Amino acid sequence: MNHLSGSAKPEACARFYARYALCALILIAVLFCFAKFANTLSMLAFSLVLALLTAIATPTFAYVLFATKLHNRSLLSETGFFAKTTRGKAVRIFVSFVLSLAAMVGLLFSVVRWGQAEWTIALVSAAACPFVFMLANKISAHEFNLAFEKTGTLVLGGVLLTLAIGVASAVVFANTPAPQFNSVLESFLANENPFGESSSVLLADAGLLTTYTDTVLTCLLSHVADASWSGYVGAQVLLTVFSIGGFVNLLCACMMPDCVYELFLPLADVDEPEERLQQRKPQVGLIVLTIVLAVVPLAAGLGAEAKAAEIESIEGVSQGKQFVQDQIGVAVYMIDGKTYDQEAVEMVLADMAGESSELTNRVQNTLVPLINASFDKRIENIDNYLDWYYSLSADYERVIRTFTGSLEEGLKDQLAASLTEGIDDSELNDEMQTCTELAAKLQEELETRLAACEVATVPDWLQKPAEFDPKRLMEIKQPSEKLMEDNQRIIASVGGGAVGGYIAKKVFDRVVGKEAIAKMVTTLARSLGVKTASSAIGGAAGSVAPVVGNAAGFVAGAAIGTGIDYALLKADEAQNRQAYHDEIAESIEQQRAETLAALPQAPQGE
Image 1: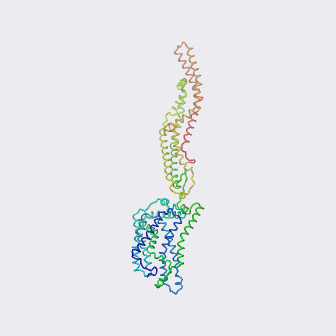
Image 2: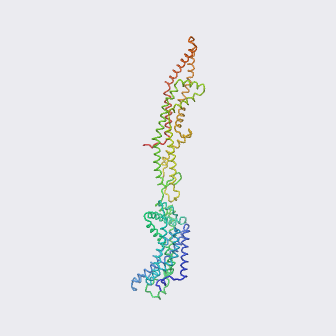
């Protein structure tokens, strides 16, 4: 007869294994339902499951600890002080409870992440457990004394089953690619909080902490896999064994349920007579202690839940969220109502600021000199226009246009032709087109890269808002926007992207709007009477020379009239030409300043 529970090995009968199969199936069903509905569990439901599993697991731990105590007591004298004062079980039961509680908490937080491989290993383990214990029992029968044979079977069976699980998991992980993530945050977001929808603040926080821990381990293991595949597989096997260790303990309890009854009986020494062993009865104190310990997870869970909810209501955020945010929280910028990763945005702004500066430098060093050259040439061409204006042929042309009503139109046409004479703006047009294309590319790249920095997948509680100065983005956008606006103005003004034509039109519009052209028209109108008088004088001079003849008189009169016209024209030139030149040049300079001001400007100090 076994000194602890009455039988040295499991009964090889259909009834025994049917009972085990039923217990194992119920256990797996409970764990599966827990994993399936963990996301919506309340703290009360979680505590009840934890208390149930802890109560099942505690006797197996206690059974082993009782055996170690029996071994220690076998070294003592029956009449000694220590032999009389160490017959209790309370301390060992309490230690067993603590170990079981830790194992079951680990199991419950692991089972919610089990995949197909883990569940397959669990089912195979449950099916193999009786055969493993048969082997363990045979080994124990040869290796241990009768008093400790069952303890040996329990320990050895658990160890062998754990080793079998380790081998199975090694096979699985050896044929499964290691997960790869670029960052801890990416790994964290890829793993869902198993208790994320729970009404319990404490469970949600525990799920967050578990997810964060798994995330860190996953990232570390990915680096291990890169360095050593065998090391990676070994690490995964260890983690699997630790996570499924509580399940092994529960299977052991299903194999040896009579350990539960031994929990409440007085401790019996190794050499205890068989008669006294049969007379042992359950102790009320041990029963009460066991009941109290079974209630502890429930009471502790509800109390901790109330405290966690209180802290969240005071601080506005749960402790779990605060911890994870401190570890992997994302600093974000709010830009135009959208959320962006601060670090990524800073990288983009640094790169794009450089490209924007390069565009500005190109405009200032290449485009601006070409624009200035175009304006300088037009200022030089002012004299071409005035030379024509103060020529006799132009003077008579204007007289004719005065009578046809096209005087002002003629002046404007000649002005436009004179100011653009000899100017080739093809290089300027090409450079403006190139700068505009670069500006469009810069804008598109900026928008694309900023869009890639959005953190829409990061939950609000994981974001850490940082202050962003909109001027930084505007300084980058401004050069390209100015160029694009210029291009739109050119298209709207001249119907194409030729900046040379745009400059010619704007210069012309500004010049003809000045007083110089108005003065020219007015002067011509006033001089018309003088020209008429000069023509009359010439005609009179021809009529007083009859002896010369009509033809000679006409020539003489025309010469006199032309001389008078020339004298008047030169008098007007001497009086007004420089003023006309300065006013037209001023108009061109004003247009130059306006055109250059619309282009991207180098920062002050450069």
